[in-house]
Image (tube, rainbow, N blue to C red; front, side, top):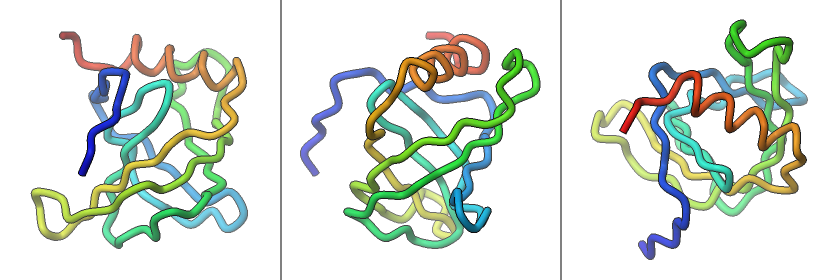
Length: 114
């Protein structure tokens, strides 16, 4: 796999839940994020090369934003180190300023310090 990431991945202190917008089906839990993409961990494999309409429940400490609606394209999916789970990488699509602000706030408020 060719690693084309330009921005450093930021791992979060705890995993946030991510759902499908239309069905509210749990897709997975957020493991890390950048302003270009996210990685989710899930119990089932996620179809790749597909645009997903997602909804993330945000921590109450985020100052007014309860959820974040966004689109992302699944780029790869592989078994996690724990064979009971799958890791999937997504490219964020059509990010608006609010989405960039949410990512920044998540990294500052909930990311591990380097």
